[in-house]
Structure formats: C-alpha cells, structure tokens
Image 1: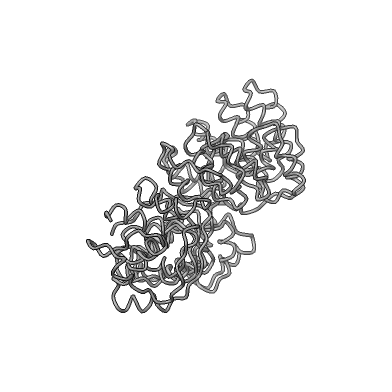
Image 2: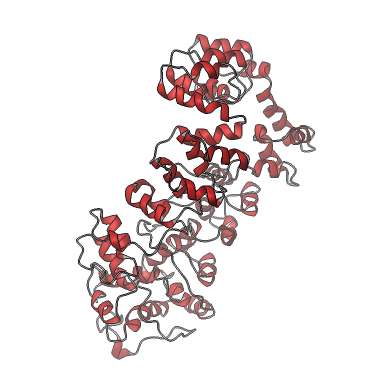
Length: 549
C-alpha cells in the first residue's frame, strides 16, 4: 500500500462520523501524520478524544484543538493556562476560519487570560501578546466590561476602567473611588473622554490616526468642532455620538453626500432629517426615510449593520451590548421599507409567524438576512441561498437547520460546490462517483448509501479513497478497549500496514488501531484506559491545513 493511499485513509478516518473514540485517539500520534491535526481543529470530537488532546504531550495537537470551532469552548478552558504560550495564544486568537457567528469565550477563560502573570513556561510569547490576540479576536462579549467592573481582582477592574463609555454611571463612580491606585488612575484618565475641555487640551494633531479615534468617540468642545470644519476633518464628527446638535445641522447640509449619508439615520438628528428626505442623493433620501423609526442608539446600530452592506456581506455576527425592544423589530418587519425588513430578519429572536412572512418577502436581501441569522429560517430557504449566494455557503453549512436531504435535484448543477452538496444527500440513489471534480467525488464516496462492495473498490482509488474512508457506513469492528495488532497474514509485507480484504473495517479502522501500537508504552497505556464514545460530524471541513512546528 502506497504512502499516499495510507494518508488518504487516515484523513478519511479522522472525519468519519462513526469512527470510535479509541480509533480517533490513535490518530493523535505523530505516526498518523496530519490526520490528527486536521481532526483536532476541523470537527466535533467525542469527550474522550478531547480529554486525550488536552493532555497530549505534542504541542501541535493542543494548538490545533485550541482553534476548534466545533467543540464547546468551556471544554477548552485548560488550554488557557497551558504550559505553552503559543497554545494559549491560539485559544485567544480564535479559530482559523472565523465563523460569522462569533462565539464568545466563557468568562472563566477570559478571567484566566486577563489575570495571567506570564505568557507560559516556554517564554515564546508574553501575557500582553496573548491579551492582544484576545482583543482582536472578537471573542470578548460586549457585556464583559460591565460584568467585571466590580470584580475582586484589580486587573479586571482595570480592564473595565479602560472601557469607560460602556459602563453605567454607578460603575464609573465606584472605579473613580477604587481602592487600587492603578484602577483609580485609569478611571480618572478614562473619565476625561467625556470632558470636552480635557479632550481639547490633550487632542493629538488633527489628521493623525489617534486624533481620528478621539474625534469619533469623545466629547468635543466648540473650539475642537470648529477646527474640524476648518480642516475639513468632519467624518469623525458624523460618527461621534457626542457631536452637538448645531454641528449635526451643518453636517446635514455638507456638500459631500457621504457625510450626509452618515448623519441621515442618527437618532439625535432633529429637524434636519426632514430636509434630508428631499436630498438630491437617492441613498441619502432612503436613509432619511428610516430616521423616524430610529429613536435609540441601539436601534441605530442595528440599522447601521444592514444599511451599509450588500447581499454578499459576510461581516461577523456578534451579540450587541444592548438590543432594541422586540416591539421595535416587529414594527420593522411590517415596514414598507425593505431595509427595515432586512433589519428585522437579522434578529434571531423574531417570532415564528414573522419569520414565515419574511421568508416569502419579495426583497432578496430580506430572505438572505433571515437565512443567515434566524434559527427558524426554513430549510428550503437556507438551501436556496446556498445555491444562489456562494459567499454565504461556509456560514450556512454550520447552521443546525441546514437541510441534509432534499438536495438530489441539484446533482446536475454547473457549480461543483453545489454538486458536492447534492452528492452527500443520503437519499441519492446513485452518487456521482465519476464526477470530474475532486470534491464531488469525495462527497459521493462518503455517501452512506454505498454498499460495502462498492466501498472496497473506492478505497483502492486515490480519487475516492479519502471519501470512502470517511463513509459512516463503513462496517465497524467489534469494540476492543485495548488496540490489538492485526494478524500477520493480514498485514502488508512491505510496510506492515493492513491489506484490503472482504472485511473492510479491518483494513481501515484496523490501520488506525495499528498506529496505536507504535506509541510509547506510556501513551499506549493512556489510550487503552480511555473509554470509547461515539462521535458525530455535521460535515467535512476540507480547508483546514495542518500546523507545522
């Protein structure tokens, strides 16, 4: 048996939904090549396999697990204090392929990162490096600063003090009187964000990157506002919640249509909104028509998420710090304005009866928003969006409601990605094993309708071997808690690997078990003590590369 065929089999086993836990644990050994890394990062795993990977002596295995999107992040908590700083950093950074639904890390993991005194025993990264990865990962929920403002640990109160504008007035007052000098000092410095005179005194040169941040978020004095107009640096003013009313009125008449668009939906716009509804720019007029429906900054944010993006937007979906009321979303769902219906469709809490209505909406973007955001979106809508909008396919495949059957009519679709989806449908009578596309053949070979005789043939063909090894209908061996070597007469004379025979499971799962016999005695003992737990996989993720040390 060639090395390439052996590698394909092992990769297929790694993503076989029916593979026993003891077989998957064997794949964690380096003798199995990249299969274990791909498995640890790219699929859901039985508890026994997670436990084995968490304590695995090879750092690359733990790093791969740290980036797993499919495992409950609470199970990954030990990695936050892993001896390797790189493992910690990988967990803080999040998954390689960022999902649209950004999964926040549990509070205990965040606390571990933010209170760490070092970056790991290996010294390759610092605790500050790891926290930097965390901030850029979007894995910190918006509510976390408020939750930490009264924490016993001063490092967490310090973190809250730096998120000043997300805190309540009572929390700000408490931090200004904090018993820890560092926290108190940070609170005093942060409080200056809302002091126009202090902002003016400390303002960096207008036009610099730091100045843009200040002008976009802080309270501004009349002198600073006038300087912005004089220097034609008004984009930050249009975004700043603290911009005074007289400045907003001037921005609403600015000659640049982009500036007028930025202010047209603000809840504090005032009488200028009526003027903008007659604006010569069509986009400005549309936004101004929405303004009467927007009375809070939470509503503004939800509209802003939709109005500036097209049908193929794949921006991350995060939990907002504050949400508009359900009644507001219901009003949006009944609006004649398509943008407001799109906003309603993007709210996962929309009632079922409104979901049914929006699923039939004449506006395609309403249907797309519903498919990508709402757990009750009908399966046929998810499939329709998958076919018509390739940008959303990776996200749609992660949704529990995505249909696993009813796709056979797509088997002749010109797009190979769509044909691959159809080829995996377990109701398909004849999977397209001879399709010219590799992914379609792989999906067809993994179709559970195939007979053992067909699978035996497919396992010998490099074009289909990986898919066939991933087929959950592959006969399973009698369970043995301790891996046992294959009989000599069934092993390949050249490399000691198993040979194909009528009993396919010996050739496939037996080969993985045989990997376990090349482990060290200590590792073999840990494998033999690990109970078997069945694993199930929603779908294969072929685009997860292995990690190299």
